[in-house]
Image (tube, rainbow, N blue to C red; front, side):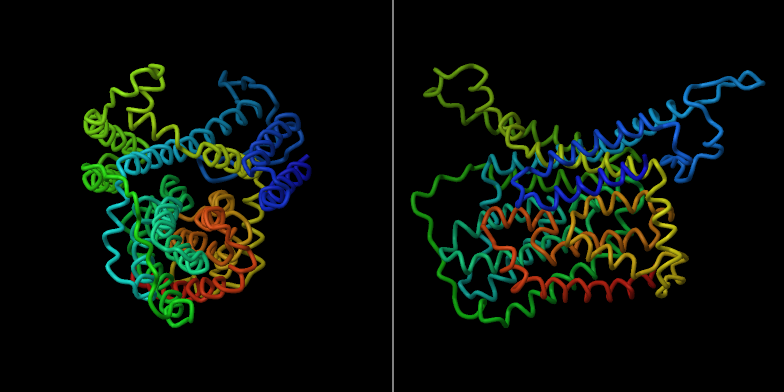
Length: 475
């Protein structure tokens, strides 16, 4: 039965990676393989020889002697059976997954509220030059900073949207888009809210905000600077840019700047809230969302239009409420995809499959200097994880690592995983959420990216990794 479950995961994952070829949205195979995997576990529960306790990060002792149902021992104590353990494990994983999803929902809603007030148009004021190389550095810098605050996916969407408004030539834009992908993924790696995978590690109590910044800021910065520096000498970034001036420009909301800084400040507040209260991050995110929503409702009241009084009441409310409007624009398919893939990986983790795979990796690959950090996991394994995240989605890879390794919080392993999974995906355009969304927005060809941008991403990835091997010695 375990083999069948693994095959379900493999075929489901293959369908996810071939999303554009088979024309099926990746959320569909993710949800299907999640449901089938847990159904097979339930049906074959009496055939498994081990069970991984995620809460205690170890195999359940005496699992082979347990029956399906709860029993009572000679002392009168209840001995939980396999069915009870499975239900508890499923609830545990659902709770941990829900923490991530609710957190993402809050962050995405705040970003949409900022956009509702045209807040991101303020960023366009930073561009005061027409020189291509300078504009490259401006966009890479913005991508690096913004991705650490509003996540790399959203930063990519915002900056490419700005590019589309000011740059006429698509052939020029796709070069900028390629470097934006690298910079956004680099910026997301050192922030607990900058990348889904880093958020997973942070919420899973594998990394803390302070150590994450200390370990990864310099490697991430190098990962962004090196490709941008090399690219600035390429023919594509020589000369001046023909910037398109917008005509029929809509008047910007007078609260755009206020909502931009309020929204970004509210998101930055979340890690501080977690450190002070020790509550899960989604609680702080909901508080931040509530505060931003209060100001959004107050500011939007002045925008009420009597010309739309004939609309249905519900539609009018949705139109005039920035919160309702923002929630309607949330990417729910992405949320459901994360639900499916995280719970499918949880199925493999619960069977002890990932635990066994981790043990095999530890024994089969030679160590490369990790003794200084007190861990037996090879640096090579983590580098391969980064390369793997370029080929397949980094979310399940990091989810798998959470079940594979049992190192303590803020061990250098977790920070290296955060860096590798976060920045390694830049090597292929399908390797990160930022790349996929850029591919869709600008219709970037896979092989064009592979020939023009991938080598730059690889150089940046390796340069940052070398810097990390140095920075970890400082902690």
